[in-house]
Length: 219
Image (cartoon, rainbow, N blue to C red; front, top):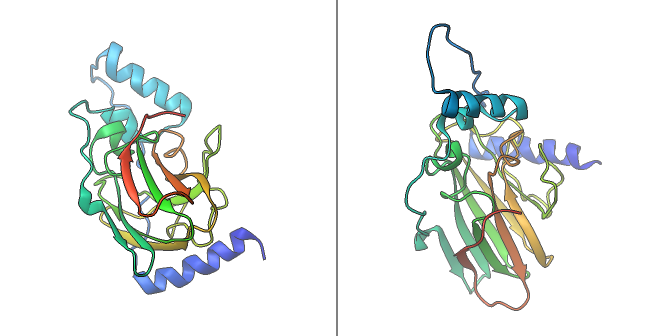
């Protein structure tokens, strides 16, 4: 059985378990005749986004400058009795990068580190009020993929990887981090991850407890 076939089977089962809603399609952008916009800002951003095939929210919203995102300690809990790390993974928490971010971080600016062999539970929630999003753990690839790829760990993905989970939708992901190394927590909706919607996962045999830390952004 191929990974795609296994994915479809697991996704069907988890849709029944979680009762997630039907997917919301990506927005469609249209020009409005007679509207005047700044050539230096809006038009240029839209032109680049159309050329690269980026989502409409990124074209419209930009980066939304502001203070750096603060890590909330409540995002991560550790149960040393069961060796389980529980992480609140929030898609589109802020307007950063046109809301293409996890927990307010983009391009690997946040790193979750877990001990080798621990169980990882990710409570995924789509906070973005406009676009669907998804998440999967993938190898640290370069260049970044533009669509879902085989996950780095068994069951390390949300339902509807390509379509995305709609605004306010949730899903739970549970997997065993049984291979050490560097990985990405990546949005599988086409174009989102490549546009910066990813953070890092480190699986290490030398740490005893899970941690969250801000890290240098970019590949």
